[in-house]
Image (cartoon, helix red, strand yellow):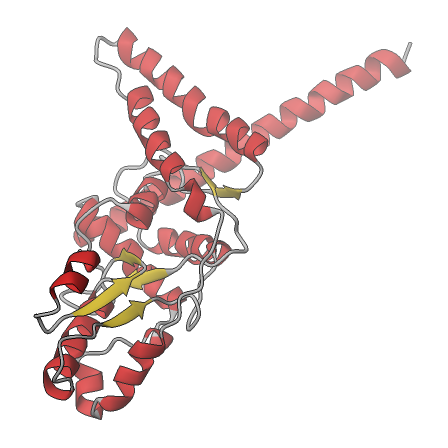
Length: 283
């Protein structure tokens, strides 16, 4: 498309390049999102207790952009082109990115996302939301087997026994295929210069800046993650807000059950070591 525009040169055009587009922060509705691509699908899987490990570098920046911010930038850029530029020979390019102006790192995305999960849990969950971020491929593959593949195998076996069609293994296979496609980006970071967007903001009046706000420096990522998780729950998973009290009670029960299971497993390990000690040191 950009090559075509360069060849034509007859139209008043600008180019806006957003980074990873995610749920709206303000408009049309806070948290609005309509697809499972990228981080939105990842959050949905984590929220359902379906995804428990992700291959990424926790210290790197994940460049995110709420969808209404580049839309506002598009409107402002078109206004600037129509009002101040008389020639169509040059095309202004606006990078709409947060990484250099207001960065959020993977570990922050996980931390604030997990806090939001406690406030906006799903009505139905496979298990308690929990996720590990790994860069080491061996550890990641082990966790894939423990958290994803083995539970899917056993649950599908139970599904077959009760006469229903198994689906979880196939679903995990598709999920892992999608996750593998974005590993390249999860393990790297890029720095985009947003000089043109900052310059454009300086040309706008205070009222216009408030109406068509594309200043990523104003985003409080911790507060936004609550909006994002709530939006994923409402618009992607389709859980109505009226189900929140029941969902929170269900999450509390699941956490208590998880604590009991962990205590039981710890007891088994301690008993195992005690039995070994008794055998070798009492004879």
